[in-house]
Length: 274
Image (tube, rainbow, N blue to C red; front, side, top):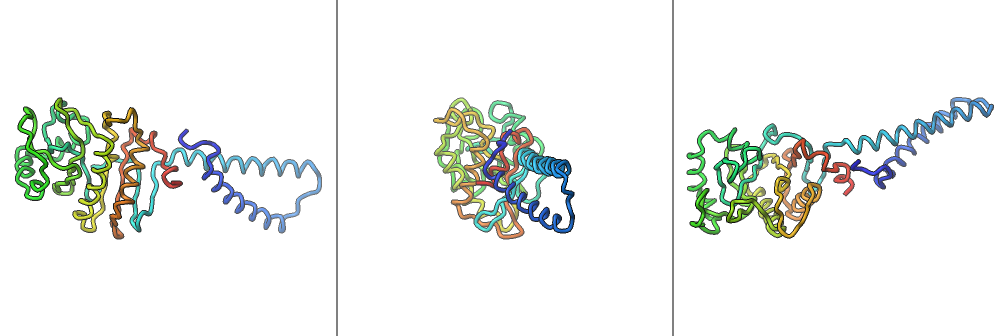
């Protein structure tokens, strides 16, 4: 279970519920006369204790199966929930590598990734897409180098966090690539990406809602870290939004979409507590 049976926040919420139940019972005892015999009193006590236990267990189970929570950060609404990012309204973020590669060959880009699914289902003409990216003035101002040593894939390497708007999708340079075309990130890269990413979002979003996947959950190579959990990645994503001071004015909002396969790794209840 993601939420412990005697979680502190859960216990505090239960005490609030308990006080409401106690107040109700106090009023009820004024109107209802309870027989004086011990058997009746004992039975009522057992029933009441059972009800209170059931209420607590219900709250505990509900906290464990929770798949959505809403936070208010910097006067902005942030929703964390499970779902399919392609089904979301507004702008949707898709993570690319630092070259904005578009070759889905299960080497550069895997078919079963969000990046691969986007290219396969949303890009009708990959050659035309590549030309638009290559000639974009804003993107060309964010080229770090031209890597002529790459034999497969594109050669322009962009600053992490760079965003290219394509229809209602925001494509962002997220992962670095090594010489063997394996995606990786240092933790410093990830933090810098997030801060630059929110800055770019602040420039682009123009009052529209943004849906973001759990960035980093598909990367197995975080250099310098043996393991980093989906919960930790989500905490970092929320923290970076806080420190960026990016504000989404109502009714726009930012949503972090957790894939159904990752929901058991996220403690949604904890997010609200923190």
